[in-house]
Image (cartoon, rainbow, N blue to C red; front, top):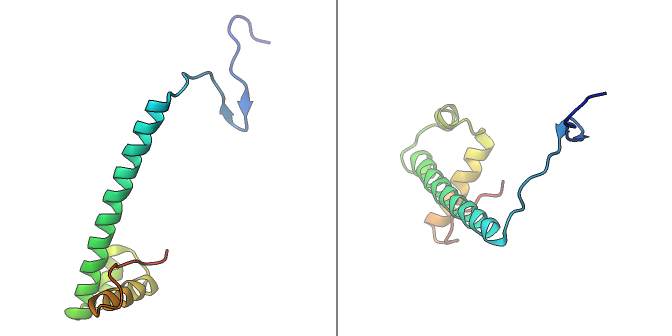
Length: 99
């Protein structure tokens, strides 16, 4: 038994403690920042996929070399290249890969 202050209760292996309440504005600001970061990530991912597609499809870079550099699987590189060709050929206006 401890004396003085009590330790917060355990939930699993994590101690739960009292925190300041989050205001609606704090939550909204955090959500806006998250959405901006998500949009930036999606733009960078699209640029990367376009560069991969251009390298493999247009310049003949071997998939295995792209795999070594990116860490993606050959199957994922193949999907990126297929999406690149569809966009290049006007079948779609976005370079979207199912993950």
